[in-house]
Structures are given as structure tokens and as C-alpha cells.
Amino acid sequence: MNILGIIPARSGSKGIANKNIIKIKNKTLISYSIKSAKNSRLLTDKIVSTDSMKIAKISKKELIDVPFLRPKKLAGDRSLIVDTLLYCLKKMEKLKKKKYEYVVLIQPTAPNRKKNEIDQCIKQIIKTKSDSLISLTEVDEPHPFKLKIIKNG
Image 1 (cartoon, rainbow, N blue to C red):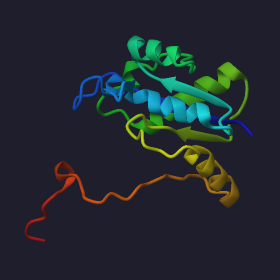
Image 2 (image 1 turned 120 degrees about the vertical axis):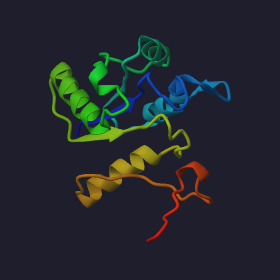
Image 3 (image 1 turned 60 degrees about the vertical axis):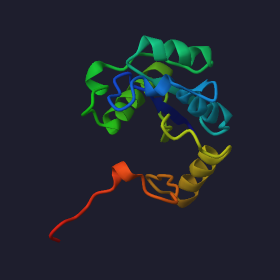
């Protein structure tokens, strides 16, 4: 079974500039997701999808494949991640000359995943014969900037 892991890391973040390569505990944010992907025994291919030469260089130093740069039209504020995933899937199937049964999105902004979480999710989706799975985590307290007040109903 062929399973593609994609770590999307665009350069144009507006909230926190260059967030994917800022350092947290002396490691770039993307490093945590790269390590998780590399620890997976079930991902047959693992790539970083980026529009940035700087992010590509950092990723390659961590020995993960960056087989192509993502077009700018897939790296904007209004770009949809599903479009990036489909683009990467098609490019990788052409490059590797194989079909992938599953695609795993590994967000750099979720660095706190458990050691075997990726493989556990892959096993779960195969076992249940589902077509998608999303992992969530419960938070103790909602982030104040994400709260909305509903007035008048």
C-alpha cells in the first residue's frame, strides 16, 4: 500500500512571519512534523510542500524530500489546503510512477502529536475502510482570539 505524507509549509504567513521556521526549543516548528513523518513506518513517501527556497533548504537539511516547489497560486492567504494536497498527489504519482491509496496531511502548526500517532491514524482509516480521518485534541480553555460573541440570537 502506498501512502503519501505531505507537510505543507508556505512562506507567506500573515499572523506570525515565517512561522514554519521559527525556533521552538532550538528546533524549527517544521522540524517537529518532519520528525513525526520520518518516524512513521507506514508512510511510503514523505515530502514537504513549500513555495519557499529557504523552507526547502531547511527541510532538505533534515533529510526529507522536497521534490518541487509549490506554485504561488497554491500558497496564498486564500489558497485551500485541499488544492495543495491534490496538486502534490498528482505530481508525486507522476514522479514516482505509482498510485497512492492514502494521503496524510501533517500540519507543521500541530507539533505536539504523539510518537506513533500518524501510524495509529493510518491503521484506523484502513481498518474502518473510511475515506477520511481527522485527529483532534481537546483543549482545556478556548483561545480568547478564537472566541466569538453572539448577540441578539
